[in-house]
Length: 239
Image (cartoon, rainbow, N blue to C red):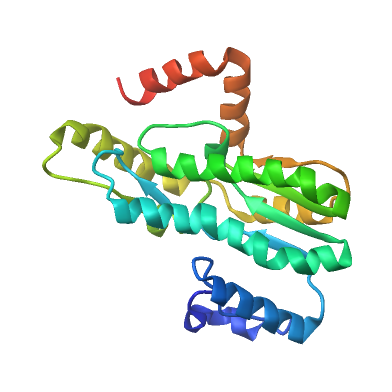
């Protein structure tokens, strides 16, 4: 956790150990690795789950917002992988589970930065799988749709600029639509179960979609093709 003081009831579980770790700070990652190995001696699975969404039209998105999106969602995954790889390589064993999103497979309006980050995670994970497989180090992707988590309320920042009214209507409509959908989203236990499945699945399966909406969006894009899917999305959400 970035802030261990927010651990709450997690501290009460005898089989859970909590370490300070910020994926945007390489020293923090290395210190957490050293502490875990000191306590347990070996690490079997790394789940790269840290992330947030920078939403809104791209033009008003600030450079600092772009930097933060890349630092957390892309570079954070890369540096976690880089720091822990030497341990996995030493033992010729280990598994990285990278939490992507249906946004890593399809795009949608006013999410250019978040979609960019998840497409990067997809490409990075697939590419490194080739070089790590001979070392018996596996990588997998879990791709959730929408679930009822704090991400919907606290994990999204919206870029906005009053001097660019051309984007206001679409932005407000998207914010309201997401707020309306949030109470109806499914329980995130399904994602936890999918991660558990991926961690214990000895097959060479690479991708694990989870969520009815994720399955529906991805199937639709494959069915009608990328060009038609882009036009359908524009007609449904923007026009």
